[in-house]
Length: 207
Image 1 (cartoon, helix red, strand yellow):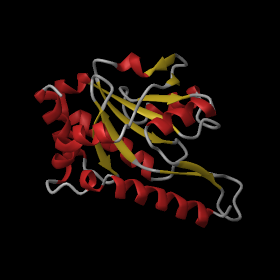
Image 2: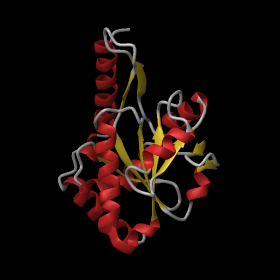
Image 3: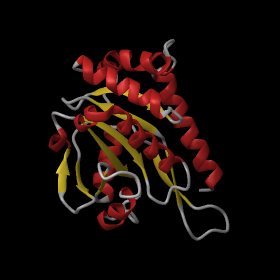
């Protein structure tokens, strides 16, 4: 399958999700509107769920290990040339703006490329951003299960005349509540200040 076809598939799937959740994405109040309506959307469309993965220290973890704390979840991969590092930087910058409240949030980076993103490789990668950032990997089956739970699209794509593959994938930052349910979803390109403001509003309101 050509890279162009794979990308068209990715676009089509993303548009389908956006169509189903249109009211959520196009809230009149922007990011804050999305946060306020997330509870309703979460009840209408199940996003998130149990996962069994391995963190960047090699420790097996599940979603229940993070109960009681807010989770910022992003799916990507370390060989991503631009989008993933930008979104991860948005996450850690937002945490930096939260001050003491940041201790109540755990940022998770779940790879969609377990073939290359081993725990050891993730350990080197996450330290480039913030010591609080946790990298998660697993078997292909475990990654597929986590991605399915979060409605994440991903697929391997090899550009023409290249021996190195890329990963096409959807790109959203998920805010999960202390109980593990979806509270908000942020589109690619959300500014760190907007994310920090949304986080602060949710945390101080008690979820």
